[in-house]
Length: 300
Image (cartoon, rainbow, N blue to C red; front, side, top):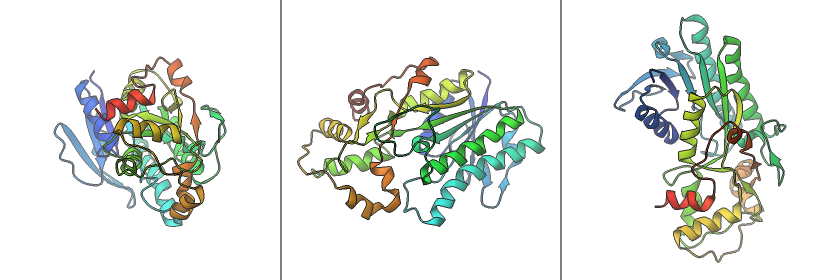
């Protein structure tokens, strides 16, 4: 392969899986991180987004940047301070890299960045495509700013690819363990009216799609979701079936979720139905297209 990839957010759950997959395929991988790394075969360079500092050696011999860095959307209530941190952790980070590219010689030709289906936010039953208009709530605004910051790379002559990522299913982190816990305890139930669409994707397909984007000349934006979205009720039932647990409680009312989560409740019961048509048309083959087979693999 010969390519050398620099990952931001490489120590996160997905970052580690993408790193391992790239190493197995013969790529060299480096990380940009706030802390020294201890992963074998991965060199870690330090940066501090708040201070605007970055180890300039991080871009030496790099061909491609994969930008995953960003504060967790659902890691805390959306105070004004938290909202600012969520957006700036995504936009200032890629901006810091671009400033370095402008002033130092390099051979980087591609930037592949995460984005989110929060771009569309709560769209009810409408199927969202890449050219659908963005929402202008917090989630939509966050994704607009994120993608705009990444698109600055076009001015530097870079191939820019953005993946609007859905709900990544992995039993070791993200939304699935939080959904599964009450089900395991026998107190699980659908949220709201249960009809909200969940744009899910198996973590292995996420990793495979990053590799696909790296190895094919894709640019622009693609939705990173499985081709068969499910409702919250269908997902809850599928998890319960996989865990061999009954669902006997009534749905959790929407007003309770709003009381608990505040504005962030849109993450929990907002309805986002998203199309995978564009990435499939580009030739990507999903390993897990149906929720039952995805969960069966995850909980094997």
